Image 1 (spheres, rainbow, N blue to C red):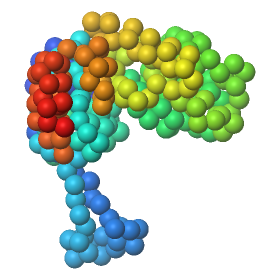
Image 2 (image 1 turned 60 degrees about the vertical axis):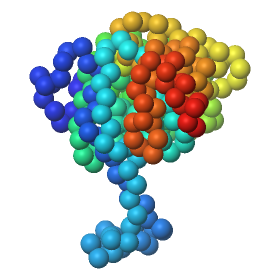
Image 3 (image 1 turned 180 degrees about the vertical axis):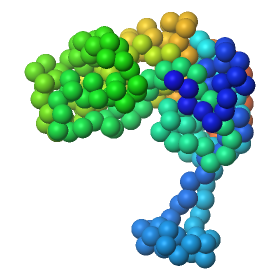
Image 4 (image 1 turned 30 degrees about the vertical axis):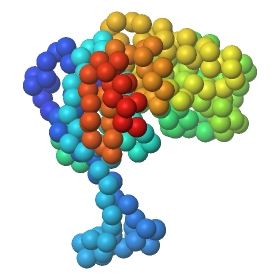
Length: 255
């Protein structure tokens, strides 16, 4: 699927992701009272609200099959850019174009229905992403096997620990044959053995030259291992875009 407010014809077929002068502005309220006031008392109260541009006039193109690392400190705008790619958030201005099915290793525990079993939640997540019944039936056994939750897979998710929900989320994300994989490297979950399994599977997906990868990291070592290109962000702006070696040198020299 394409998530965009731009005609597909305007973007070359070999482009997986395009940000065209994208700004994402968040309003910051001092407290709930101020948030409430801004809704009901309009502009006069709203003027006192602080805004922050989490992404600020951001433009880049990522070709299909590229593996790109986003480097930056906390608050640089990396997570916001990923949310715009996955459709969790929408730009305040500018255009985000995404060509292909996105699988995200981000907020793994979000979006599960606690009253449904793990297995039923796999089906629910597949339906939400627009998968056909055939695709969901192909993903289910692989996700179940990867999550390795034993009998709990057929128990309601409200009985799961936080770690078990993450395993289920990870299992689904890495079993759905993504065309675009969005990875926050901090999200390998569980014990040492399971983390190893997570990294091995992500590496396997990333080695498929047809898969486009966005990799967010603080660790330049992990970026160099997986990616050929690096984009350095700071306070929502793009400071550098080039080879991973040059991007790492820029990042390490400036932060």
